Amino acid sequence: MFLVLGLGNPGKRYQKTRHNLGFMVLENVALHWNKRFKQGEGSYQIIQTVIDSQGVFIAKPTTYMNKSGIAAKEILKEKKMDLSHFLVLCDDFNLPLGKIRIRKKGSAGGHNGLSSIIQTLGTEEFPRMRLGIGCTQEINRIDYVLSPFLLSEMVLVNHMIKIGSQGIVDFIQNGIDWTMNYHNR
Image 1 (tube, rainbow, N blue to C red):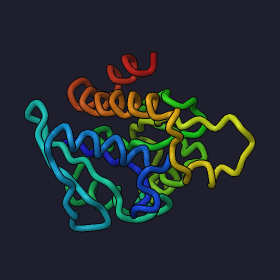
Image 2: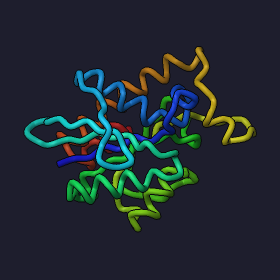
Image 3: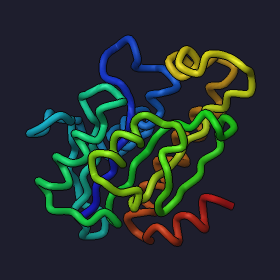
Image 4: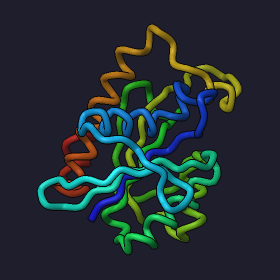
């Protein structure tokens, strides 16, 4: 069984913001799989499917970003899942817009959602896909991540959403090492 958790903030106000890129990738996957998110038994919305005979859950926390660990812990406990089959998708302002970086483990790197998951689970030992939103200027980072993408950025954003969606399938079918080698080149 696999769990993919996309990070973002609930509500229309945040729907198209840079911080919701994890949600955007999962919404693209749901559309491609012709599935709809349903309210889970905890602080999350979830979809269940099967890929190559593997049970797959994709989920979005219904809490705000800095409480993402609640949903992660609830689902992992409920489904009795191994952390090596748990992939987190999140935005990253330290990566250039359009760049994707996949890792087996690591620190939060200043990301409040990852920080919440690490703190709640008590470990950094889970795979993550960081989706670059770029922040080259010295501006307020909170305002930046909560701002919508510019129209001029949407070609790169849509391409990143497509590649991120494929990265999820690659992770499930081929494992983290293959997925890192393929997508991090």
